[in-house]
Length: 179
View: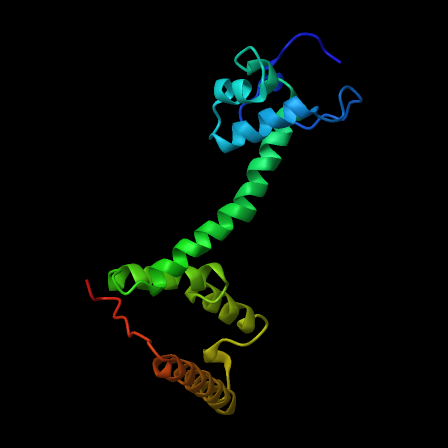
């Protein structure tokens, strides 16, 4: 292992993975530092004090195992507690009658997009459905009639969903142009 430090050894936020036998796991004090560092938003001095270190903790950020543990902890926190909190915020914005209609609309739109049901998902599905098929100018009249009929059925299905949503107790119709 090299003794001199190069730019590759300095931490700039990314993960550098090294496979070495030197200190394969973190000790309890280092784990406490990692937890405190992630919890306080990246303040090494505060995290070092919280974990019982006498210095500012900068030496810990030079340890690639500590840096890797920080990134993994931060990633897990975002994907678990962070995602849960974000979803709670979106739900409250969509259901709060005091929230402006535009805010509720945007929250609903984001939720649909994030879950794969938004306009971009529909457009992507339409593009995928078109793969390997003829363009309209290459179709016969019967093929065009089939496309139109499929479109009508899809539109009827979408209308039924909208009607079902309107019929729900407490449903509010939102006009996206309403400001």
